[in-house]
Image 1 (cartoon, one colour):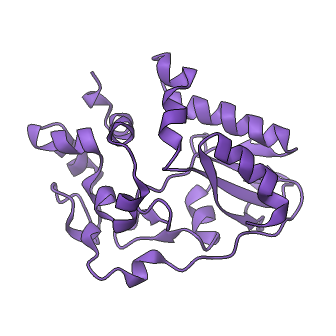
Image 2 (cartoon, one colour):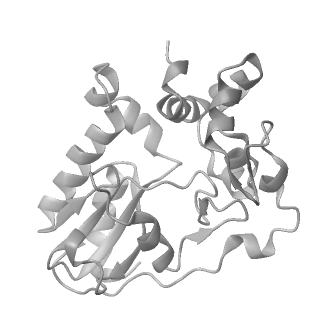
Image 3 (cartoon, rainbow, N blue to C red):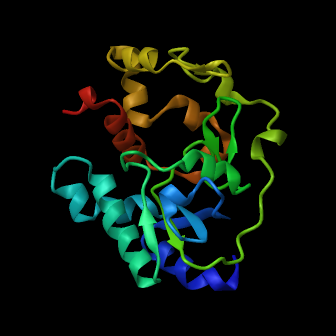
Length: 222
């Protein structure tokens, strides 16, 4: 981690978050970031995130979109403390977070096209971005982790056959989750994401995986 970013990364860590990578503003980014020079992508730290978020008022108040509301409050406060702005993937229209992630050189497309990085595996997700006014040195690129994966279990892990190397049939996934056969996916998370060796090492709690599945497939919520 570069010295210039250390105080910011320490504040992210205290909130169960981490810096997933960054990039300097390109010619197509102005509509999303204004005059900011540096875009820093913020992801959950899978080893620490869930206990922090699940104790937050947004998680407990039973109102809609708890994670989005928490992200806006927490990341917004960190941005303000460091003289930065924030933007989020749930804005309408959404900023190009996937393009930004790939441009960092630290996040990559997996064999099933889902984003992957070395820390979270296929559990990788982004909660927001910090927009710095100045150009700062950035974390270096990291090699794509899938290049050395010999077995590539993600390609055959989906019990519904909805997600493989040919694409993602979202309708088929939802149909599977509506039936008894899909209960394990709802309770423990996406089998494809969980199959990645890096995902297994990340240690995501089952309660966190189930929370995300309920958000993805709301009809499963009790």
